[in-house]
Image (cartoon, rainbow, N blue to C red; front, side):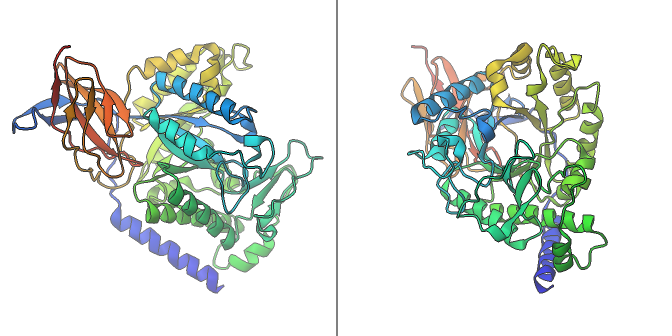
Length: 490
């Protein structure tokens, strides 16, 4: 009872803090901004330029079962070749954000003190691959101007393909007393404070060791039960549930506490890192089956971005559920829409998916509702390009753009880059702490985004005027522009 009372006090304190500190103004992220750019370093005059719009253009890279990566490539050489090929495709499609699954089943794509190496890297759970997979993947993603968000499943430890199958042997790193088995899935017990703390400890370890831009979790909270299966959490309810009107209310509070704990852990270690959640597109399932109260999380700012999986056509549930999330998940959070690329197939049962037209209708509807961007599930389908979906994506993403500011409250801009100079084919400038950089070319009264780089230099073409901004890693707060530099024709 004492432990439970402490949790409620912490939860209420967080609610009050967030209510007091977070603004509620909904800002359009796709609108274009006009800025004043210093003409030359030694000149105080400026020129007004229209800046390009911003939007999230994200892709999920699923690793469970090797869905997207590493695709049963078990050698370092083959794994690197495939991810490089995938990233090059994403770059050509002007993708700017990657959600990479680094912890699909209480395992890790890095050397974790809490959980074993993932079986999907080498074919064997617990076997080290011989190189730092996560650092390499982050560096390669950043090298192409894309942000890297570490995607993890909060509770899942193992799952069965068939009811008669057995769960794998529990790894020695995972305390058995934290584990709860159901017919088809093994999970960390959501009602135990120790399991929630363990997830937060895993997040903290990851943030301290790796240059990720955010932490991303998906929709697996309480398990979806099989027919006639029960949750079997009576003992936990008796121990922790006093003060709740129902067991359903208790379960939602347990998930709430995980979300609050993860949020606080992330912001304490790296305030600019983004915490994003991708719930099911069915809000009733979220609330009554997963026990995830998305509207509450948004109203209190317990996460930064909500990415509902709206995996239906516009002739079914896409439009009404887009409306629900637009009205209920934008209070203090940004809204990004998840699209099901895997449904598109020339032989799909639903005729809506036999061409790419409905993908275009979905994306147009979301843009009309002024969401902050898109997330595409998943990368392998951009490699396969069924029914020409890449042509629709290319049409919607014709030029590179930055992701918008995804933090809460006012955008606190980093310092503008200083010392912009050139050697004739390359720009270079003084670095700004914890930032990446956007390189712009001045053209006909507009600023055109040329490249995004994670070091303080960039190759450019001659006969043009350029300037650079610093963009804070994670939240994407963008500085005012540097002075311009003019490259003469060669």
